[in-house]
Length: 203
Image (cartoon, rainbow, N blue to C red; front, side, top):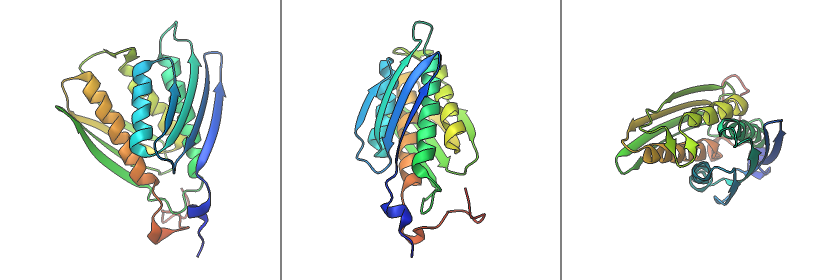
């Protein structure tokens, strides 16, 4: 029986350089949650740290963007580059559990995230943020981050904030639930080692 999916390292490094941003993402899907993050937006770094810590992904992100304009290009392009690195790291998805879901609370806030490494990009996001800014992060850009990610990782992603009165709490539950859902979906299934998790035979 093939052990391809259990022995091949699942890591990647991607660089994206445009007139608006210069971004480098390095990740290891089988890490311990170590993060080195520098995007120039403190609260965004805090959210990316949740992905690493709760997803058990070693994650390095260095971004220089046109923050003198606003954070849009930086946040969106980090999502794009993170998605590209994710797609490269998962490869053909042999042995992958494929699906993941999580509910995460923080005080009054509760969010649910469901992910499918389907090969088909799709984002459904319903998060009624109670404030326009959290620190230096425009909460509208959370959608742009996840849109960039799904488009380039090739995943279907459903994000719902079920309860929340504090935008910081809402955002943090979203990112923590995303991380936990990723962790579940990215696990290697010992009962399906070397098998692509689809009746089509490819994802």
